Length: 323
Image (cartoon, rainbow, N blue to C red; front, side, top):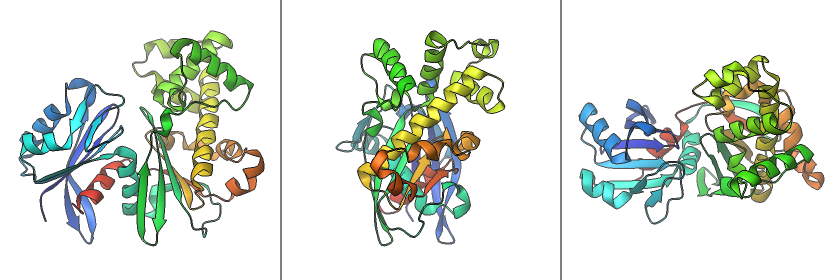
């Protein structure tokens, strides 16, 4: 097998690993994670990785957070531009493939055992149909997955940059608050790590919320908000996570309706696995099915959270094996 490198470039980090086959499956070796903010470019990270791993790479498949067009991508939440042909030339690889990170995640689903999912809604597990993938982290990724027998065909999208649609009066006020600051409100401005902080600031500035000492001391406000909400130690943080979960569920339902994803909705990204208790208490599904004439249809759709952090990397490896 050619020496294969798999990569996942999110809005905040870069993961790289060499790929080997074992017992018919994939194995990631020399797995490394880099803080993207510490590097000027992806090339500098790749050079560092290759120097440390001393690996002779011939093929690379990279899942990148951003729209991949003509084998190139300007990353959405990083000031980087990646070009497959340029990477191939500069590093002497035989083949390089750039794919959208959510598409990579979709392919990674084929590598996961059932215990790598947390079931939010059982639904009709026998139903056949498209599947949907929604993943909130630094940004918000979405994809539809067509299933044809044992083959899957993920379709990339930039649905996270669609307009945010409020579902009640409070969310309408949130929209107005963000619109006054941003001039346009995308779903990603609410359903993402940045969105958590936006919601929190909205509650503080307009609805009597307060910033406790924990907020000012934290270097990672979204993580601190989640921690305080889960522990029940701060009312404003708890209200923030409630609004976030409602908006996440609403956008997941929008994706399900647009793609008729009777085969299921997968919730990925780095946020969902950490807030399982909030997703599992029924709040997510109450908002998910709250779509008037389509409530019965949405209630039938299985919903599960992906708890395997390496799924995008496994997906890049899966695609790379076919190059």
